[in-house]
Length: 203
Image (cartoon, rainbow, N blue to C red; front, side):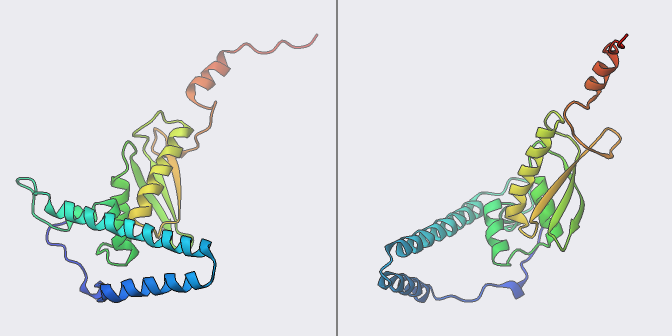
């Protein structure tokens, strides 16, 4: 992200009264308690606690990133570290506050995937399917490696670009063209097949 990036003020979150919000939560829990269903009350309390943990972790992460000194010679951009953090980015996207477009966020997500070099082939707007090509930068190049790349991409995209609902990864061969990864069809398997003696013909 270039220095000086600013958040679109049209996406600013509406003002919220913390006291009134807390009271609303208590009122909802009280109404659930009056239904006589302890399981519903317990589930609601668990949900509230999970949300508080999630947002609390996000706020703590923001404070940590903002309080971390910028390295010498690095342009000072207070948003750079926030937008590149998975937890903070997921909160911003959840509330439609992330200032970057989908293409930029997809690039951020793929850049965060370690040991796998992934390139975007295309994105299907209707199905939310993102098609990627793996350059085979990590792993052994077998089918299991491709599955690992897909899982890593899905995890990262869930934080930065939840608009992507499905990921397909193609493996690129030496020529750069996509190739299917199948067990027993590699060069070694072909060589072994060629070297094997032909079955004897029946008399």
